[in-house]
Picture 1 (tube, rainbow, N blue to C red):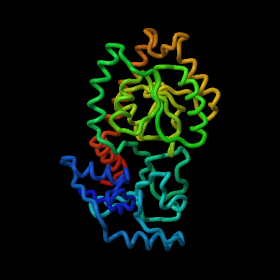
Picture 2 (tube, rainbow, N blue to C red):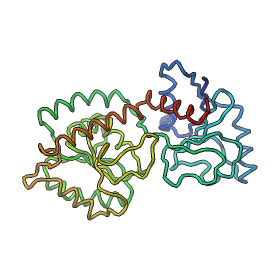
Picture 3 (cartoon, rainbow, N blue to C red):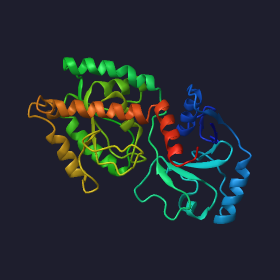
Picture 4 (cartoon, one colour):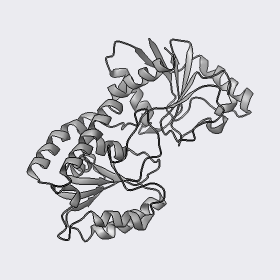
Length: 315
């Protein structure tokens, strides 16, 4: 099976591509997997696709560009990868008939595309960073749990939207009263060490609803709490199975802060890690790591892609 990705990565830092999708493609290319041959680069079909889109939408999109990636399977069928918050075609997808055989969405909202002449399916989410960094810290975290030697109660980190920042500042005021708490740090190693050494993580919506920090918590095995995911993934993330849910959109800043404050005993210890809750805590940690291993690890995400292509008769 031949998988050819044509993705012109225009996002660069110091001359090197920084697109998360492009990094994932390079990881897939390096994986020794007998079922497929992966290539990345220009395609003679790019011009035809751009002309087709212009004809049916009246908009001259340069496809692919930035995070827009198109997969050509066995020199015949085309699959469009849509990251939702970086859409090239957006609502015009339903105006482009007979072009794509499938659309795979990384940030798949329940509404999705409407009236498309091709199926649209959710995929997964991944971190473009070194997965060995995550796996290495699992054994360290296991020792920390066994010895009850956590340095921090709660890890709070990451870029947030304005509403997230309001919540962040409200919780930070409470964090300042708690000696065993930590906020994010810019150094990668220190950031992972703090996730590893925290009883629980806290996550609010960032630039997208599903963020790298969610994956990083799951990869290391640190349970975290957040609002219930609206984003769909191919293998679903289940509230209070893979993460602690504090509710949906009805949960405002005050309720979020109260949920946070109620997690602590009067002496500052975190309730969620007492003997009564330890079983659920360990289950959520194990479920999260298993989900990561089966969905977001580069090798697993490649197998997931092939599974989807097979289900939709693309291969």
